[in-house]
Image (tube, rainbow, N blue to C red; front, side):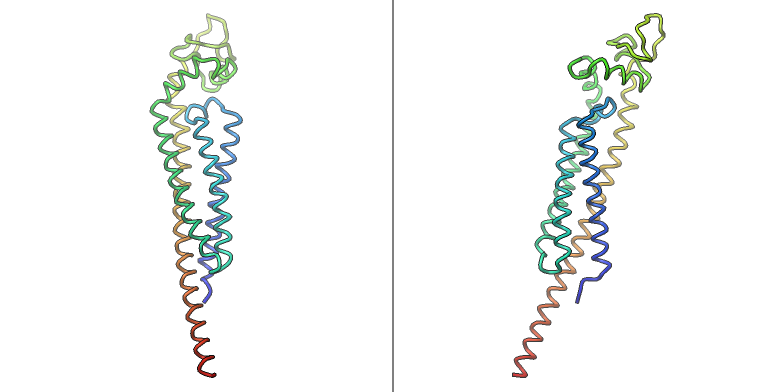
Length: 226
């Protein structure tokens, strides 16, 4: 009694989808860590990105374990259990990352102000890029720590737009909605692959019981003939 092909193929499809989420986490974390753009630093910190990189690595490792466990029938049943526990760990980490994003959003304006007023964190070139990209000048108002840029020249007669601090909610909220949606989608994907692994474990268990029953029947038939 072999495992139903639909169960096996469904697990493999979902497992590759699970791997894709890990690859996305790794790639985006590496890109954003190497180039912390102004709009990214509003909602993400290096610690969050490093956590995302670690979760991506766990996903890649657990994908390999799950692939091995699903490929060797009943001989690698323990690998499927390990895979399932790792998926649960990933779900917990992703929920924690989502919670951290929400908590950071509550203090984003204060954090943004500390970046703007400290040239060692954000240099003039980063501030100038932010001003031009989001159509604002300075922070609290259009003269507060304003730097020269295309949109905000040094000419004091230039009528500058509002300060960048007022732009923060709209910019941060747009990024947060995207990140929340992605995190929620990842958690849903993880829950589905976890359910699929449980179904496969159950099917493998039924297969193992069938094999044991068949072996006993064969042994009994052999003994009877003897």
